Image 1 (cartoon, one colour):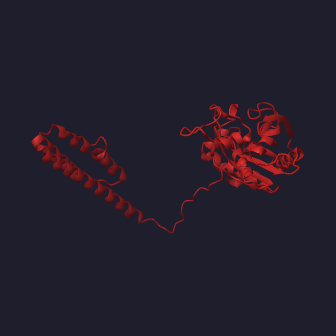
Image 2: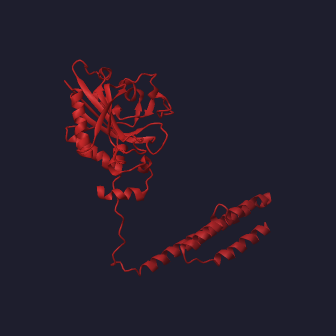
Image 3: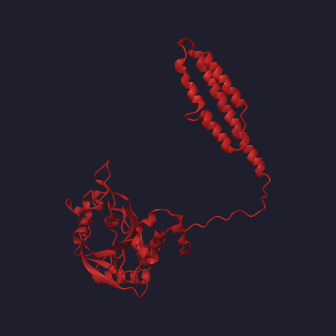
Length: 343
């Protein structure tokens, strides 16, 4: 007990003699005395060596010592802040301040707005929906049966608490929700973020952004689809861009196609973005499958329609000459500030 009293008195003398002129010295004081490995915590540990009949008295002494140190810390902190404020009072407030850097919109946002504006000129409205979706709206209603490989956990992020819910793999879920409303005709685009369990590389990511489109009315044909997409590509990339359609397969459209444009990165000579082919696939499209219409209580004998979907990152890469999709999500200000003038 006597040894503990001597230790406390010695530390009190040391603390009373301590003074600080800046915030660093105050922080050093806090670490030395009040830190997790500081003196207060260490001396509190001496309680285990105090005899049982003296523990009450020792506990009071230790608590008083802790309050003493905390009070001294508060005084040092307060005096340092006030001293700094006093020094700052000599600053001439009439002088001009430092210029703040100008922010910029993200290139993905710029591209999304550009795509939306083009389709809005064709009469397409904008619709949005949930990113966490149930099995029916993400798969079942889109003619994707239970055994379809797209449902595999290697391709889809499932919610652990409820295996019937997923992170949506496309914005087609919004198409289903719009068709279920039964308000025809439908002419809408659906922008949003989607998720797929893919290996991250220069060409692909586990999350990205899409814009999908849907047009349902009487007597809608594949020719209507092609002319709509031709208009979009010419407005987006200019009249000199080359376009090609390739037959493809999607469970929710029939017939289906993929649309390619000539690569702007390499000028058609071949690079890692176009896989050395000179062409870049920018979207998938097709006529809405009759089963999808029936699933949404739309009569496929009376109504037809087309749908299309594209990633936003890939057109942005083409538009701005970006060769690595990972740059979009790394939040590197040096990369993002290049797009300030693109607002």
